[in-house]
Length: 104
Image 1 (tube, one colour):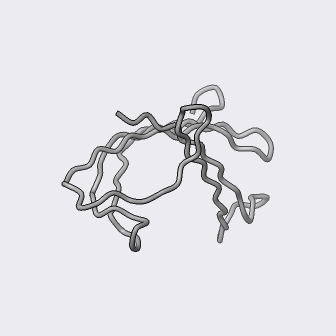
Image 2: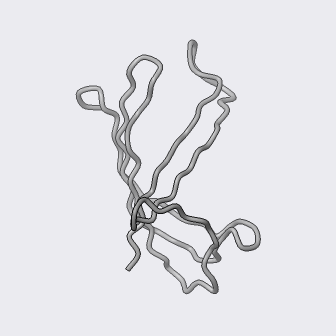
């Protein structure tokens, strides 16, 4: 931690698990970086990573995209439940992610 920011670096690994057209059978590996700050009940920050495919995919996953102007953007919302927390910790949380896509 530095100046109240929690940060870390490490690897990101993409494991080809899933079902039908919602996954890829390609393994991936790359770097990741996280920076978080907690103020009161809020946690905010950024998680950045890049994944390179390390084997040839047989097909690509299918997904729907939204465009802001000509920029493709992916939005994600997630719920999480904490089974164990420190005293005063949350029982649940929400995650919202926006991914700007830059295809070649």
